[in-house]
Length: 280
Image 1 (cartoon, helix red, strand yellow):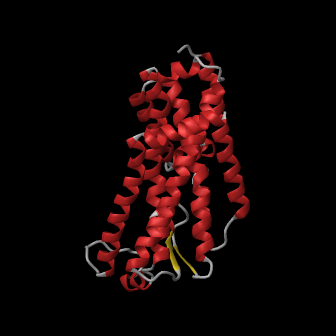
Image 2 (image 1 turned 120 degrees about the vertical axis):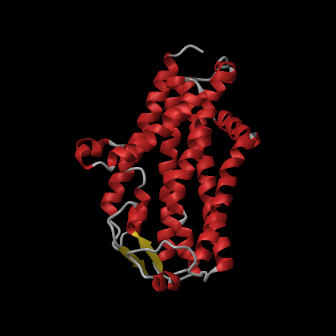
């Protein structure tokens, strides 16, 4: 099992496509730097109706930058990267015949799936670490390295409103939000592996995984479909955002974390069951 994990990790490091995730992080940092500097200089026509521009300027600091960049990265950017890489890791290798060669050896199929899942988990952890380090390092060169944290509720899909966290509380909120973001990416990786085995084609699996993920968000935002909302994975996966409340709802955060873990186990169990029934 450990040999399989090492093999998957070495294979992922050797592939140039795995560098695309880190390139995407650098690119979004470039966009954020430009946007923050333009906002600081009052450039651009769009204003925030909830906050005065003067107030936004006062809260320009590295903490705000580092936390703000996490929202679009977690809701859109990193899930897309994990979807593409996860689907190629299994469906792509099935298309190329590489998985057939591996299955001919004396390894169980569940070990193959778990090894790929662990490799994806390590990759997603590396993405989050690079995002945290790069965003804070870049922002400290341009803004005050610390200060109060200004949070706009709708950006994190929590209750509308403006929250201001004192500087003393901000470091642990940022670190925990990045740490708790990892289970969400791990679950998306498990989903991509499960759907890879349902299609066994890279393109179809990538489209199906991204469609399932984003459609879950879309359905979750439609009030008259509320009967299905408690069963949607995206209701629970981004539980890291609960750390942005003035008073962190720890009990709800723990409940959502358990749901996230349950979905991850379910995705992996289905992937292993389907893989055992398939002929390569």
